[in-house]
Image (cartoon, rainbow, N blue to C red; front, side):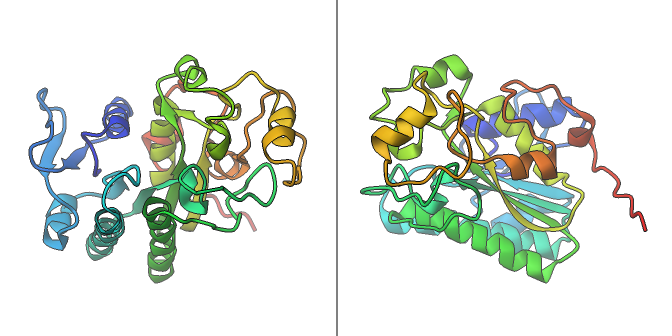
Length: 286
C-alpha cells in the first residue's frame, strides 16, 4: 500500500496485519518505516513511474493512499502529486496484474468544503451526484475516480474501488468537538473514524465483484446534536430532501458501501470479519 506512513495509512497497515495479510508498505523516502519488522518497507515517490513499479512489485493488490490531502499547497503540485501519482500506480498495477485496486478519493470530489459556496442537488447525497468541484484538490479527486473507471474498462475482471473518505477522526467524541454547526456546514457535518475507514479499505480491496465503483465512506450520523432536518432547513433551504433524515442522520448515502462491501457506517470500531481476511467466493446461481 502507498501512503503507509500517513494517519490513515498507519491504521490500514495495522489492520491488514491483524487480518493476517502480508503487507508491502510504501511512502516517501525519509518517512517512518517499520521498526518492528512486520512489513516489507519500500521508500518510493510514486509520482515517478519507475518508483511506482518498484513499489508494487510482487504485490497482489494495492491500497493507494499516497497523496496530498488538502488544497493548501501550490495548485500545480496538488494536481501533479494526486493525479500523476495515481496514474502511475494504476499503470504499475495493470502491468503487474494486481487482483484488486483501492484508491483514496474524497467526499470533496463533488465540491464542498473548499468551494466558495458548495452546491448540492439533494439530500442525502449519493455517489451519482453531479460534480461541482472548484479547487485543485477536489478536482484531483474527481480525476482519480475517472482514472479508476478508465483502467477498469481495460481490466474488466478486476475490482477498482474509489473511496470517498471524509473528516477522519479517532472517534465520535473527537468528531463532535470539531467546530460548530456553521463552521461545518460546507462539508455537511460529515466524518468517519480511522478504524472504520481502514476496514472499508480492506473490504474494497477484497471486493469479489469486478468493475469500477465509487463509495461514500462516511459515518451514518453527523458531528452535531442538531437534528439534520433543522441543519438542512437552516443552511440549505433550497436543497430538496430525497429521503427521510431522522435525528442526526448523515447527509451522505452509504447504501452502496453497505450493499457491495458489507461496510457498516454505524460502527466506528469494527471487528475484523472474514471479508477483510480473504476474498469471498462468488457463487453463480442459474
